[in-house]
Length: 116
Image (cartoon, rainbow, N blue to C red; front, side, top):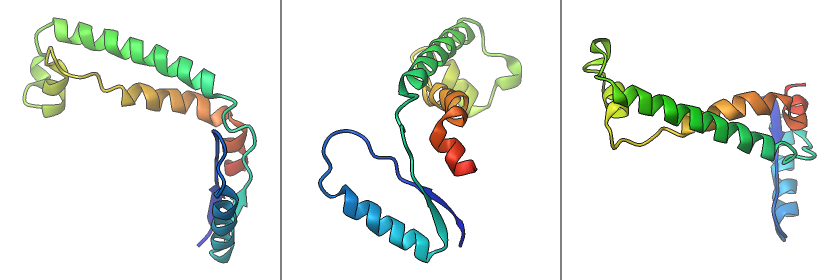
């Protein structure tokens, strides 16, 4: 097996993290997997949060507009479209999160380190 492994750690004290990193590194190297150090892993967090908020707002407004009109005939019988068209239905905010990730992640130093 070959590939790359990166471990991103953040937050407060983590007494056992060095053991976890060491064990994961040993196992990865035994499996012929490169281990990549990730520095400044949370550097783009605010940029990501901003994009996620903007995309979430746009998605919500578009969905409200979609729900304001009758269901398009071409989408009748499609479960996903009918679920989105329900007035009390949820907003699939995961789409906004994924879109924000696709915009921000390629520019992060750790993604550039993983992809070479």
